[in-house]
Image 1: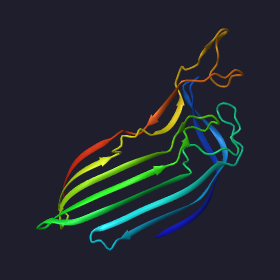
Image 2 (image 1 turned 90 degrees about the vertical axis):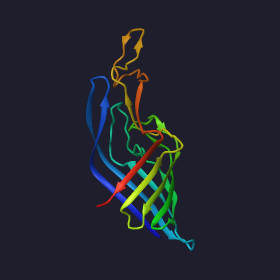
Image 3 (image 1 turned 135 degrees about the horizontal axis):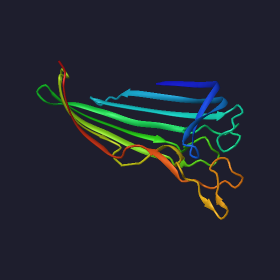
Image 4 (image 1 turned 60 degrees about the horizontal axis):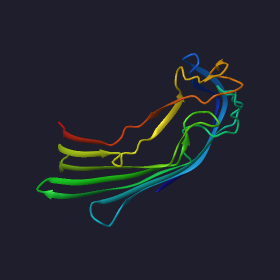
Length: 211
């Protein structure tokens, strides 16, 4: 078992944001960001022959602690950092046993958890809700590990996870008096958002030969 407590302060931090009104990346001085928390992990070779269990958990609190005025003119001082899940962790295990002769079989599985988080450095940013991901694999291999065939499954529950968001180019909404500017605007309008996401369920059949 291992456990760690940490406190990091990043100074002279710069943050890039996409400006949909001029279709370009703009750089802002975010001043300072502080991240602190604790994390722990464990690995247990159980009394059951061939069975190993593992797990980890982490708590992280990340905030902008310097003056940071973002693309929309919002002061982000004291606001949480984007893509920061307060709680994350996983539990998993591996079971290995002889199958026939020098051929071994192994089953691996991991269940991962992430708390929700904001997708961009804005006060009312889109958010990703908390989620679980399940990975597993079944392997047949020789005891010298020279030959191996594996069926590998990632994100078996087919969970679509968002990693970041930004305004869509040319997404300014019209108003009765004409076209409002995107950023900034006294009567700011909601812009269409594009979101980068993970892949869905993935199944891979893998053959390995080690020389």
